[in-house]
Image (cartoon, helix red, strand yellow):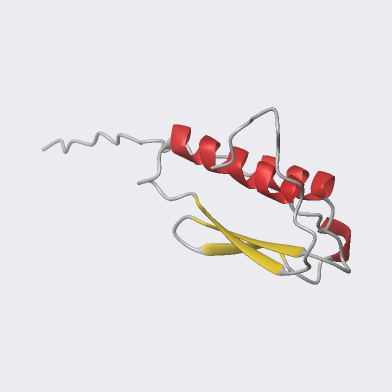
Length: 105
């Protein structure tokens, strides 16, 4: 992960396509998912993303995959737009439903 220091390296200047897969499955846990979101937010701000330079694509998955951002999504290829996309994803809360039934004779 990127660490905060007084002397940050300069942002990457080379254009590339960066694919990010965010795991929202039950094995990850809420705290780890929040850490991964923080890492991804930092990552998209360190790269100088734009529709004509470095582009980012995001897939989020749980039991199935969801394409959150395509490389070709021109309006999403800014750090602020990408942050908004990342912030929309939450770790799913598992709710258990208990059904009681009994038979009468």
